[in-house]
Image 1 (spheres, rainbow, N blue to C red):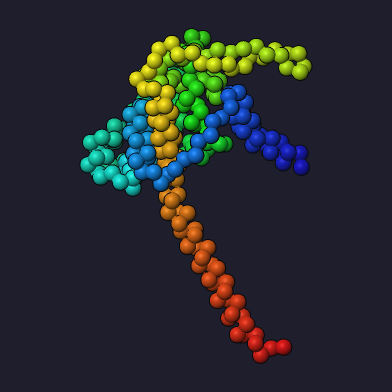
Image 2 (image 1 turned 45 degrees about the horizontal axis):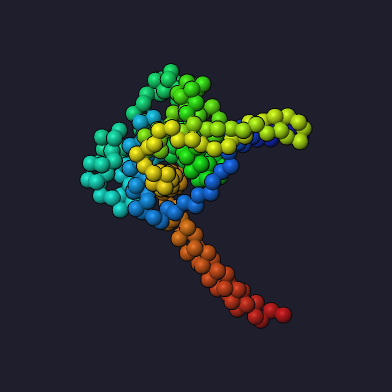
Length: 247
């Protein structure tokens, strides 16, 4: 029993660490993997800004044809690391260099939206809450992921901001720093609305990439349910036919 309790506690540690990684309230984002135009835009953002450091080792470039793109469009516009469409999205950054520069190798992003609790909401908020922090090695910090090792890859689009915090006293009398507001110190190439739309497309694509066949799976599931319902009715009348002469 003690071993089981210890094992359960150890399994809960990652979730606890995630929950305490930042104090920001998560903004709600509802992905729509049926919006192929959004997924195409998200794929473009992903290969232009994410694949430089992050791999998607379970996602092949050729799978992007399911989004309505031709093989030529994929090769000409989206392939940045692979030589053939059947290859996976491998990071351009070497693992050794990443560990030397950032202290840890960037994680694979194939199933990142499914790996985290409230994955879409977390990613959507995370990508919108970077701010300048001179105390950090990269010069960047994040409200959701405090002391994050990743720099802000989309800073040119969003611009540079600093975060202002206020001091509040709790019921126990202890003081704590609470986020108050952002102040833009250098405007980006996009407006706030344009940047939010770009992040939505990117997160939408990350959700799709975690399970590209999810739309087909849901449709298949509906067919299976109707088949089982029909089979249940057939089995019921078959049972009545077999047992009709038995009292």
